[in-house]
Length: 289
Image (cartoon, rainbow, N blue to C red; front, side):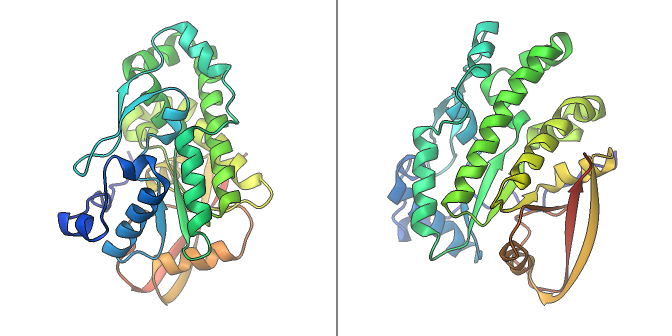
């Protein structure tokens, strides 16, 4: 399967105890308190010598807004789903009929963090894709059964989830985020298989990405390589490479983001940023409508 991409770094969210003490990080407050989240964001940036503030620190924000119940975790583990909000068809209808253009309490707090930091830092917002969110709202076995047995309602559910993802993405850009880092790891082709990717998870990501970049004032969207490479492989996306000399990947992203307009880049891990390279390849993406 050509579309499989191996993640380069999975340790970004890990901070040593010394850093937690230096920045006086408190859990679970760092996930639900504006001041504490700002401190944790700076701790990550400083510890990893990053040039971006990256928030949030988990993939549960969108699912929580649509009803999932969470365990907020501690210094050893981040927020996790404690219970699924969808147990029955009536629960699916509740999500389908929900007001998807309404921010949760935690999403509103994240917006405030971005607004506070935007004039001093370059903000990257990490946005979760539809399959990742759906598998937090309901048991994965039940979700895939829904896809097989009731495609119409499965698509209605996905489109409601997509609507909130896009709304949140637009809100964080208006608040001051320079880049959206989009990932739908649960919908990756090596996890769901070519059939579900081509018919469900790929088109869902395609719809989200198109809406994110077509909005006036849209930001640069960096698509996780697992998603972008697979989209290109199945003919939903085209890739074009541009080379830059004597720079780093982060600096290229900053430069490209400053040029304005909603654009897509990808085919590289967003966390693979630490080493300055003599030549950096930026892969620009175009969704095939």
